[in-house]
Length: 180
Image (cartoon, rainbow, N blue to C red):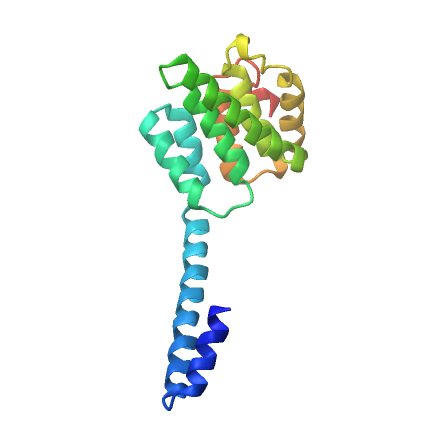
């Protein structure tokens, strides 16, 4: 509606052509800038950095990665945010906050798994959370299923994810290096 009004005003003024060109260029730069920014956000997400943050267990790193993910446009966003939120739940001190972050993260990760149940990386994320989740939250039912799925899909995963799985398996009680 506003764009139509501006074009009508442009036609009515002697310098309408100049104004039209200015508006077109402005819209072009706004749209082009948004596209470039979106590509940069997608390119800035680094899986190896994500897995380093998951392993580090530092609140500041988790918060920074959540901010990065919040503005990124990647297909795995929901699963990564879910895993990070559940990781954050283990780092906060207040029990109510722990539960809040865990529930939000669980919903995000489980939703991502429902959308793409054949994604081996999502199963790995869930296994890492389940293995360390307190028994009280009752989030351990899929440990063996996820382990078997990771074993089957390991060779089809990216090098970064494979390395994260290998690194994780060295200290895991569920997933062992010889399983891979």
